[in-house]
Length: 117
Image 1 (cartoon, rainbow, N blue to C red):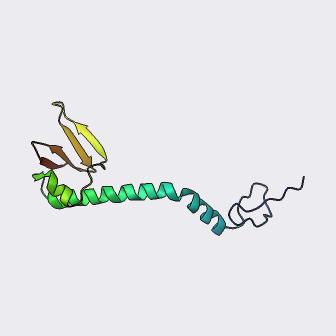
Image 2: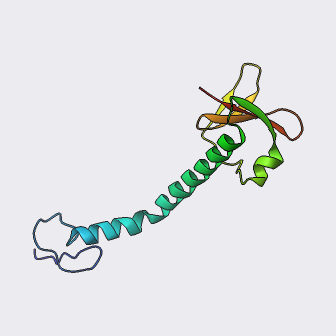
Image 3: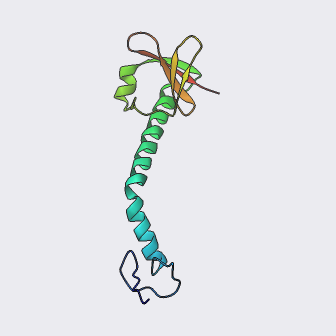
């Protein structure tokens, strides 16, 4: 039973343990980085958008709460599709949170930005 085993990354012959898949740490890291690149890009891009949203909310509302127009947030680059959580009050009002900063819709184009303790 003489099967030729090869490195999954560079195809060099493997010597040693029967369950060995790579000839070196370099090949193992290169292979795993290539295989996982798309999922890591999704996570990185999502985290970047959340971080940008958070910075915008903090800059617009340095105090506990403040009213601001939706168009102002949009103009600053806020992406309303990215949030970390939702909170619905007993009265049915929905708060959209990005970490500890959030907003709820008031009337027309006006939002109330709040900082949760």
